[in-house]
Image (cartoon, rainbow, N blue to C red):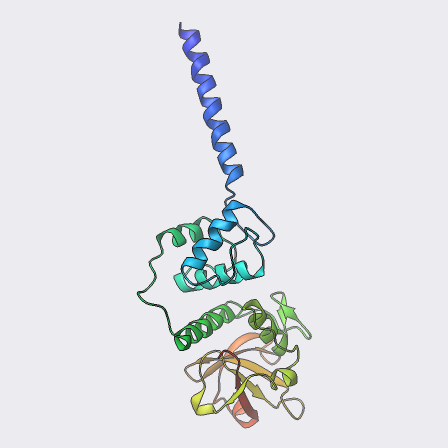
Length: 232
């Protein structure tokens, strides 16, 4: 009798373990770019419900889904990596959006704030000539990478970036605006992102890293060329 109970117990435990393993396989703990399936569809539908995803859910985790996850993570204070792990899924499940739909201006402000928050993640990344990845940036490569992450395609070089967007006066600068300087050669040869409070963030060859600098620092004050608003 005791042996029979032991066998039954062993079989039940084996079934429970198998069921748990099957459930884990069916519902991966990390949803990321390149994956597909019902879990991705549900993720997209939830992001669409809250205004982060703009396409029709199709169950394929592409660049737009990654961007939507990234923006949601930034809004709720999670690590912004574009990967929907357990913390992100839980935050989506518990999320309570503010009443009413945001205006276009509010949406633009939110996106600019998200972009600035993302840009700050790279403070301390080394300056690398021609670099455009988190392993190392030059000034325009840094801008190109940050904006590209948010689905905004910019020219690769500072002089090309200077031709994009709408000119904005220094007194009307807003977070997310690009600020340009004439440094090692005439014309726009250096660029950064205005982050508010009279400061900008940039990949500096002098500092040898991504850093935050006051706009009124003498070196940059004397070389300030203008600004462009990209998010509008």
